[in-house]
Length: 80
Figure 1: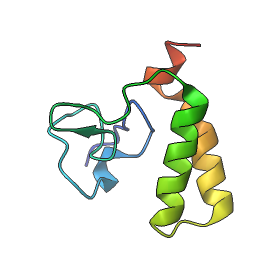
Figure 2 (figure 1 turned 90 degrees about the vertical axis):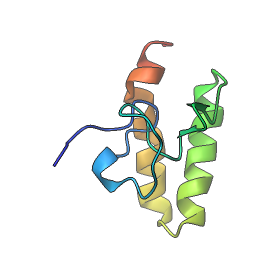
Figure 3 (figure 1 turned 120 degrees about the vertical axis):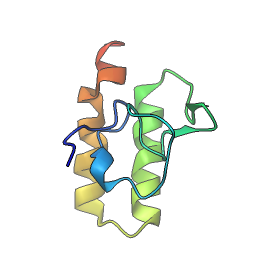
């Protein structure tokens, strides 16, 4: 089993419920051959990720922690 994580949101690729067609990004971040969020605003991406996690039933505390951790993903580290 792979222990790789999405380079945009850090979700473990082994827990990805969909097929992104990428071995770098999860299906929430990458669809139809491109990133779903092509912007460069980390805070906006974190908010969208938080809202997505909450919509899928994740608790507030856990979603807040995971959204905060996104800043350490390779995609966002390059921009800081």
